Length: 439
Ligand SMILES: *[C@@H]1O[C@H](CO)[C@@H](O)[C@H](O)[C@H]1NC(C)=O
Ligand SMILES: *[C@@H]1O[C@H](CO)[C@@H](O)[C@H](O)[C@H]1NC(C)=O
Ligand SMILES: *[C@@H]1O[C@H](CO)[C@@H](O)[C@H](O)[C@H]1NC(C)=O
Image (cartoon, helix red, strand yellow):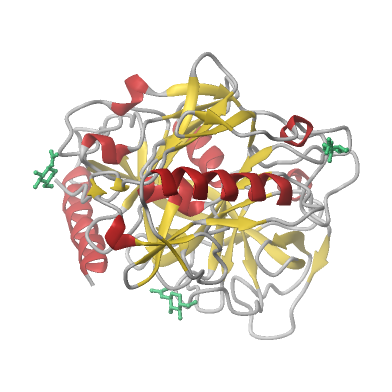
């Protein structure tokens, strides 16, 4: 409830600032960065954002899952009402640019998702159902809000925001989110369209909340500063960076031959527990010529999965280090294997005081330190478990970093320099990714 109130307040605030702006000059300043909220569904463990699309007086409120691995934006248009929606016609330049696959027509009453004829259809990948659908390509006006890194300020309209309409889509995981916002490195992705329309830097940052009950997470488009109140530090100044790596081969089951993966990969050089290096088969940590191996980042998977031999090593060494700290192991709670009595673990601002897991990344002294809040999950009362999943023996990607491990960090994807900027866990600063940014 708190989150929908926040959104309503934000909405009213922006209506006020808009009507002020509409009464004539002064003109709104050019935005330096755009902010969108992130909510987490505690049942499906998925992260989604919310934006407005369509007529300014009566916008459609769209909830869309955040997917770092998809190139475009789509949502269910079944209840979408807008007089400003424009479909892309078959064979148009926009259609070609979006890799239009066919022409589509619909015999029911025409509406945004059901065009009369000669409309561009795009094949859209639905990651959580692992299939493609033919969707109507179109565009409409989207409203976004500027930020100074601490609060949201003015609303701006992006004309010609391109997306595709799902005609009938099997229900998404979660009633609320009926769409998907792709953040992959592509011209038609969610952040790229906003950046190019408002002439912002080609970078975006995510701050995934562990819960959105008391405050929402952040998408910043265009760069910092990033303020995580009550901490007064500008987190953009202390990010460490590691190169984003291109996997030459697509990793979704239907990748187009000869096209590199659109997903974001990084190089994990090795892993340490309590400062001790795990003995891993290092060839699993790099991407081979068939696109197998390496590490990618995903917001679509709630927990990190590890190739079987890496998983076993991590589990064994973690259990050993935990027993040195007199942490009592208890019966496992599926799907997790290493579970502990939380009464034997002191609590700290960074979560339960378990051995730290460090992912040592490419770059000079770049590491992602996972404290208890990110390495453990409370599986039931008084039981915390190591929150990693066995990815099996023949996993395509050896390490798939998932949501729980990414929460309460700032992850900045700079598409110009091809670098990932990473903050320390915000919990160290006694703050998090959950905020109200309404002034
Ligand atoms: C969260 O996910 C659950 C399970 O998928 C769904 O039933 C519920 O409606 C979702 N809640 C919201 C607010 O989206
Ligand atoms: C290390 O992993 C590679 C890639 O899966 C495999 O070909 C090789 O046999 C492994 N080496 C050892 C010593 O297990
Ligand atoms: C962290 O912040 C909370 C309030 O948000 C405060 O009560 C607590 O004392 C702070 N802890 C530290 C170690 O600064």
